[in-house]
Length: 452
Image 1 (cartoon, rainbow, N blue to C red):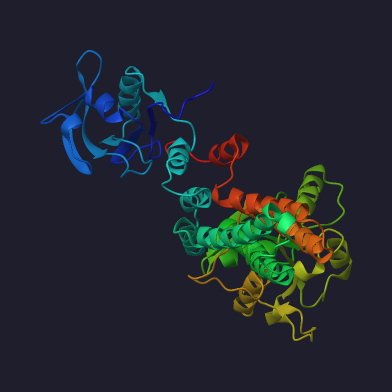
Image 2: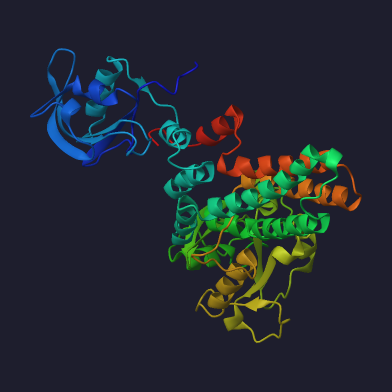
């Protein structure tokens, strides 16, 4: 169905389930009048001032009370969506919420699509597209670091950076195109060397942003870590130690772990998704063989691998050689367990631990963070990209800018240079929504939860 942005929309804005209250959000021109038509209180909501709270009852079509509620009134443009908006706080019973929404639908209010409230906030100029995406990131934040990164983006840190670069690019483009208008007079409004230098400075800033992508993804999405090794070398014991609970079954019988066990833990604000894999070995057991196959798949999809064996066995070279066929060796941490039972010398690049008494595990966790984050550090003042859409747009802008420099160096006509600069402008504009298509918007907002 094709919905109009002029429709009045409603949706439950709080999670479904037991709780003290549920909040039903309504937005659109005429939304205050629609809610008022099912509301009974001391005053009419139509006469209520913006940002005021009113107690009363929501009534069904038979004029029977569905629930007593608190209604918040927000008048345009001072609302989340920039439209007239209402938030109804009711008891959280699913039947109460259902009946209130049905009462609104009977008044020609339609159910909101996922992300439609935030989409309207973007369309009404309350935020740009990068900030709108940050709303979803805040909702999905699992750690302090991911929340801080999303908050920075919502506050416009990335948007201001992109907008500044785009403005500088527009200035250079304008001068190039101005010369085209006076081509017959053979006037030069800006030297080509200056334009080249300005473009190089923009490329430098783009490269700086692109360099933050891996770090930004770690902050937002976390790190996939596979714990790999032969059977019965301490993989499950290490997982349990890091989690501080007995999540995986520990046994002296090889092959106890038949499937990949996935758990999450926050370490210094970074989310680590730990995968305890089945011991990788040849086996005739059909169930265990399936577990080994899944372990190999987990390795392929991991950002970091903890390859574990016992100190007495040394580095499992055969398994290591198999792993580097699946993943870059720089992402592998070699760990030798049971250091409490052996004084055997090992290479300095190997981390010796004892899951039994905890020796060496702090060092392992520090190395794990270092492998995940590299030399980067997250600060409150960092403009960081964590979105593949932003990464692709910046990459396309860089390609066009490099082509513009090549054209300038070869003294090509200003038309060729202008085309490349305009394309780069559009790529930067896509990030903050200065240039958009319905496909881009639909792809972004359908990932939101309903009610936001």
